[in-house]
Image (cartoon, rainbow, N blue to C red; front, side, top):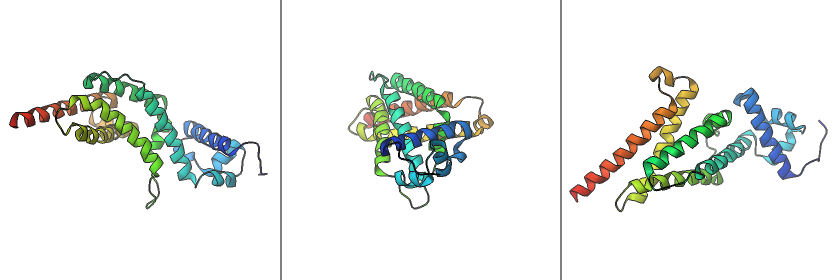
Length: 208
C-alpha cells in the first residue's frame, strides 16, 4: 500500500480507534488486528506501529476511551447522600451503558496484556477515578473513623463482583445457575452488601 499523509498523528489515532470499534461491532473481538485496522482506514500497518506499541496498546487506548465515557455517564447521576437510592440509580446507568455498547465492553473483559507487560499507570488512573466515584456513593452509608477506608475497599469489591456476574451472563452460563438477569442479581448483591456494612458498623459501635 502506498504511503499516505492525509491526516495528522492525532487524527490517525482517532481514525484507528474508530476503525477498531467498527470491526469490533461488525466482526467481533477476534477480528481486531493491526492489519485489519490498517485496511479499514486505508493506511499501511507500519503507520499504525508508529502510532501504537502494537495491537495491545491500541486496544488499551480503545478501552480507555470507553472507561472515560462510562465515567461521564455515571458521574451524570446526582448523588443525594442516600446510598441505597444513589447506588441503584448508578447501577441502572451502568447497565444501560453496557447494553448500548456491549461489544466494546466485552473487549474490556476479553483483553489481557501479555505476561509480564504491566498495565500503564495512565490506564490505572482511569479505573481509580471510577472506584473513587463508587466509593463516594457508598461513603454516606458507613459510620465511624474507618468509613473512608471501608468505602474505598468496598468499591473494587462490588465492581469485581458485578463484572463476574456480567461475564457469566455474556458467556451464556448465568442461566445455568439462575433465571434472573445480571442486572437483577447486581441489585440484590448491592443491597445485601450495603446491609452487611450497616450491620457490621452497628455491631462495632454497640461493643465500643
